[in-house]
Image (tube, rainbow, N blue to C red):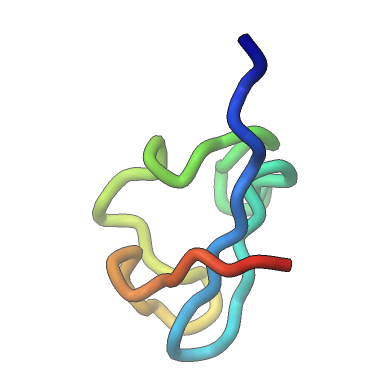
Length: 59
């Protein structure tokens, strides 16, 4: 069984994009880190918007 495809999430406030495939190493999120594995208290590194205010998007 193959692993689910990586997803992309966008901050509703500033447009920051989090791609599971690439992660965000500068924020301590290794490539391949799934959205569900990011702590609930994580915030957008650009504007401080909470994780709950991100939307999954199709690229």
